[in-house]
Amino acid sequence: MNVYKLNEDKLKEELRHALDREEFCLLYQPKLNLKTGRLCGVEALIRWEHPERGIISPLDFIPAAEETGMILPIGEWVLRTACEQNKAWQEKGLSPMIMAVNLSACQLFVDGLAEKVQSILDESGLAPEYLELEITESMTMDVDSVLPVLHKLKQIGVRISMDDFGTGFSSLYHLKEFPIDSIKIDRSFVRNCTNDSKDATIVKTIIVMAHQLQLEVIAEGVEFKDHLVFLQQNLCDEAQGYLFSKPVPPVELVNIIPILEEVIPIEGISPESSR
Ligand code: C2E
Ligand code: MG
Ligand code: MG
Ligand code: MG
Image 1 (cartoon, protein in one colour):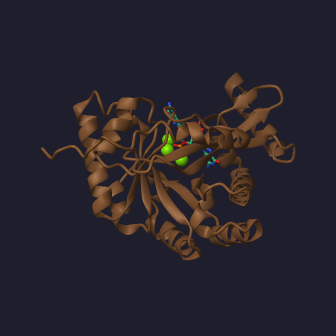
Image 2 (tube, helix red, strand yellow):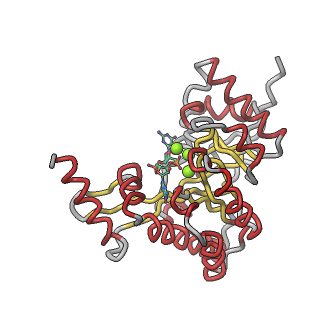
Image 3 (tube, protein in one colour):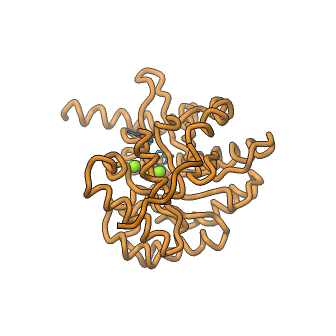
């Protein structure tokens, strides 16, 4: 057995106890409305605070959690914690925000997801319109099994968003067939939208197409002011990225709202003239 395999087995073993030991936490990354400049939502992003290894990124443990099935209880914990947090913010008097939660493919394929979401909403007291579930194109390959689940979720009243848009398969088919409310343009396109004409075209085209299909568009990975200007000029609805804030703990989020809402100049930018 090689070292890598040993490590992976150990990680999986440790994952089994991590929930009971309360080693997970959620950070929240703001989403800004580009028309109003106001905070309109957050995305919940999980971290594993490992007692010896320090903070472990979801990219390094979600695959193992999926392989072991641990993603189901972990995913449920994420949903519950995020809904409770959003409800707590509302009770504190913050303007209502939409809480986005990432789903894993395993969660979509297990029976009873919609019932679980419903009971978490009931228990937390959060209204369904303040919860958004982020799915990715790769999860939706098996249309026949996924479509009924998505319709059930829509019946509950939660929002559905297509994450990392443009990096998966048959995206246009999904846009047409799936009951989604918004799409998130993948960071890889946003990153170069101001210095690569192909990326610029892709971003602009996704925005126009989404709007014509009555979908909202969010740009992820917005790091620089010129990205923001480009997105505003092209009428993107929302943006998320390090330009505004990294994912932060809940207490910090409340403190940074006034600063966040100053990042976006809301006047003086007119839509780019059509070429
Ligand atoms: P994602 O859903 O696409 O989340 C966006 C990722 O981009 C986050 O990484 C975020 O920290 C990062 N990011 C945001 N703005 C910027 C930026 O301006 N520049 C750069 N370079 N990065 C930015 P994170 O938190 O490491 O999460 C990685 C992925 O792990 C997520 O990608 C999502 O697919 C998955 N993930 C995170 N939390 C959960 C969870 O609770 N459940 C599941 N199933 N997956 C999760
Ligand atoms: Mg996401
Ligand atoms: Mg994403
Ligand atoms: Mg991503």
